[in-house]
Image (cartoon, rainbow, N blue to C red; front, side, top):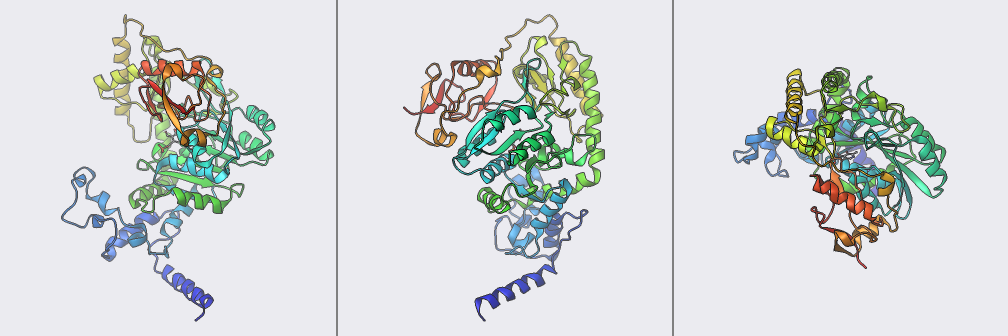
Length: 511
Ligand SMILES: Cc1ncc(COP(=O)(O)O)c(C=O)c1O
């Protein structure tokens, strides 16, 4: 038999094996779950990883005490049990196709390393080393990591900055148009919408601008995956014309932490390059437990998205109306809609100022945790943001309302604390003078913060949350930015992405 005949025999064999697949391609099925169940039903045994034998051992690790044995039973080798060695049953591909159908994409890829991985993959797939990426400056730190890994030059587009709330919203399409007209070398555009604070940009108009310049639009809508599953939320980025869209399954659906999807529509980003870059980043032992949680979240929200997300919106609206009545708290609401960078506000991101109580958001969040055992999604120098989800209840909202009332009461007559001033963001903006890749991966040194201005940053310093770098690798540090960072750390912010999190020293490109 020659090699071509052998190839035909192999593909016939694969086709025959497909017939015994334990999964079906229907929206009501959960292929990864069905395949795990079938593995246990068949009573197959495996001499492969995972070493814990999918929970079938008397020597289960202590972790099972906390997770239950079920977590181990659902951890089956993706190509040694869930599927065959050569994926003859197409278990994961079928699950990904069903996800793509659900969100209106041509293709969806499942990440078990968060949206951080998908953001990096999207950037590396869309631009080549030395290419120019037009990117909103309010990106998550993973996008700056994507710049380092891809070797691209960023041209930053400033998002719409709201002086009243001292917060950056989405990108104004007109501003994107101006930046693109001035950047003929651009190869792709990336924006971040909705923002952590819940503001959605006009993705259709942004896509129109990018496409009219012949460029793909990547949207990091880590916080907006639920938009595809509920008519009470804005249209999803994918439906609005994005070419690549990244959504965290654990942020707005019901995925386990670290689950994320990367969806593609059309061919402005080469599908083959995308899948190769994805493979470069994904683990060779992706967790079936995490993949299952993506797959089952898709079915759950396809079937019950309107009800579940509607529930979170109703609960959030109730919380909002309570907060609106509390003295000293100011709620960010619908008044921001219609700004150049805001098409809609997701009400489940309940963002409000506490500075009138004489407190930073950091101190208020610490107080709520210490006195009421309540943890909030975001606190910053002046505000708090509880995230309301389908898993909340009237009782949990009541408990939060009571705690906020107690906080307001506790602050009556108290001294005003020190609230750091955020300067004009234009004054914090720095020039990119070196490729982020060269600045981050080249020779660097640590210098005392007072000597850092005028040097090229070799790190990203990200107050977390929201994880948006104030300094990015390759930027020429200004004294305003260095001093602002000292202020926010002194006020209690945590910073990430930098060599010395106390910020006594900054990492800069070596002389
Ligand atoms: C806008 C944005 N993109 C990406 C990420 C990264 O997501 P993950 O934590 O799933 O890696 C985050 C995380 O908060 C985010 O806010």
